[in-house]
Image (tube, rainbow, N blue to C red; front, side, top):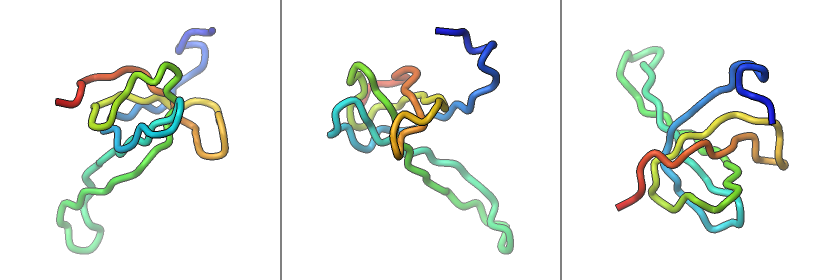
Length: 88
């Protein structure tokens, strides 16, 4: 496998695992805060990503780091990098 420098910049996100039911696939919710364009209020936006988890490491509630990758299936374009914090 090539190193990250050779492949160029890849997007990295951190989020919570919301589902780990499927084999080798987890669903990760990533939250970000943005200013509302008209009212100027801070709004929390959530986006769900389907993430490839090769070894089924992550469990529901874990804080994980994911990296953008080539398309692995119809919906999966992200790969699990590491489990940052285990769920309590």
